[in-house]
Structure formats: C-alpha cells, structure tokens
Length: 266
Image 1 (cartoon, one colour):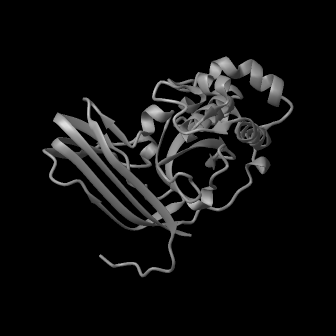
Image 2 (cartoon, rainbow, N blue to C red):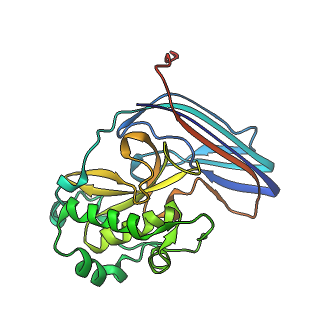
C-alpha cells in the first residue's frame, strides 16, 4: 500500500530558538520512501543527529522570527498483516542487547506500578495472546477524549482516568507490556483512519524476534501506518521539541491512500 503524506507546521519565535524536528517518515523496517521533500525555509543552523535504533534521523536546527516546516512524501508500506495473538514472547535471556532497555520503566510509563494488576488481570495468558488481551482491554474501557491530557500525563494518570488521546493509550499499553516482562516501545506514525488526522502514537511490542505495532485506540493497523521514529515513550518521539518558549500558529497533517503513482527517478 502507498500512502501520500503531508505535514505542515507554523510557529512564531519571539527569540532565536533551538528545535528538534521528527516529522519525516523513516526509510526501511517495513516501509520504503518513494519520494520525499522537506522545506524548512532558511534556518540559522541545520544538522542531522542519530536517532533511537537507527529508525530515523531527526533534524536539529536553530531559527529566529518564525519556524515553517513543510513535509511531503510518498511511502510504500510492505509490512505484513500479523495477528499478534499467535506470536511468542522471547525468553529474557535471549533478547538482543538493543531490546533489553525497553523492559524498563521510563518517564511516562512507570511499569513497576502495574505488576500486580497485570498478573491478576492477564496472568493466565502468555506472549502475544497476553498483549492482544491488554490491547482489547484498553480499547474497550478507555474513552478517546481530545484535550483530556497534557504533557505531564503519564500511564498511571491515564489508567486511573480511563481516558486520553493516542499517546495516553500507547503509554498504558507499553506500561502493561513491560509489567509483563515483554519489551515495548513507542512509535510516532502517519496512518490512515486517525480521527482527527494528526501525528499518531502507537505501541510497538517485541515478539517472536521482531517489533510489532499495536494500536490500542483501534484506529489503524500496521499495514496502513508509516513509522516516523521510536523511543521509550512520548519524551523521545515528539514531532517538535523546542528549547525555549515558542508560539503555535498552525499545524496540518494529511494522510491518504495513493494510487499507482509513477515514481520519479533521481
């Protein structure tokens, strides 16, 4: 499946500001960039920095006056549709070194506080079957409510409130998986089915030797999502991180299914 993606950001900068942007779809790992363009205007400074697990390459820049970012891409998704219920958990001693950190709690995912609940509610299940039960439990018991959380809201807050947006659903999914000693991380994606359309957050769970997207909101599926970047939680995958106060002006994200569009050769 091919996805046509567009994203535009517009901010006013009262003073020169250093910013990290993560808005470009990653190339590889179940998806292929057929064409892409990123317009950042004329920043004072621009560089690329290494990202988590080599999934993407964030942009590090410094701008003054305003920040306008426009991204366009055509992405071919060749990720297979897999039912996680049939996948096995990897024994802890056989986990790759790069995966092990995703067993641990993080800023927004205090998984150690969920051990008792996970054992009581999901203890009779194993591996992917346990993950599927967790996903279904969150989707059926949480209410998707825009504006119900903020940058300080963590998995425990969302678990108590039983409501949130995509990042909150993902945080709870990740915390439950880690509490079951199954590695979990967070991914930002462009995806079909997201309502309202925006940057979307999902969990990724390590099962049967690979990472698998799990969207507890039920909005989208892995075959209709283009990964942007991954990290421990929302702190690592923010589409924009500014290191001074900035003023929001506008933002627009559009994702649609593309037809057989000819690929331009470089």
